Length: 62
View 1: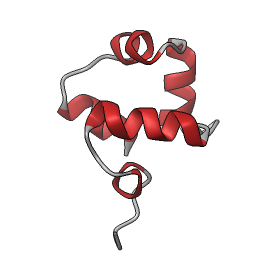
View 2 (view 1 turned 90 degrees about the vertical axis):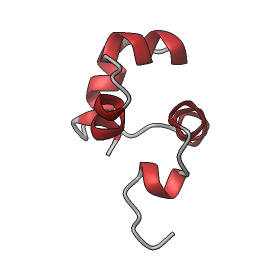
View 3 (view 1 turned 45 degrees about the vertical axis):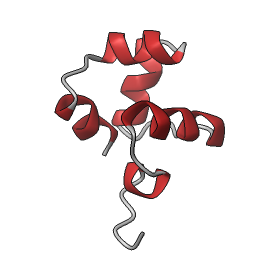
């Protein structure tokens, strides 16, 4: 879901990484399911993309 949100907003991995203070590699890991963001990063991502955490993680029953 993260990649879809990022592309929908017209943002690149480098831009999102810089805005959130993480590396581009971390964004890539999250998007490819190799790592999961911490709760604090989920909150930052939901604020950044202006979506709920449920939507961010793909929970359809929110």
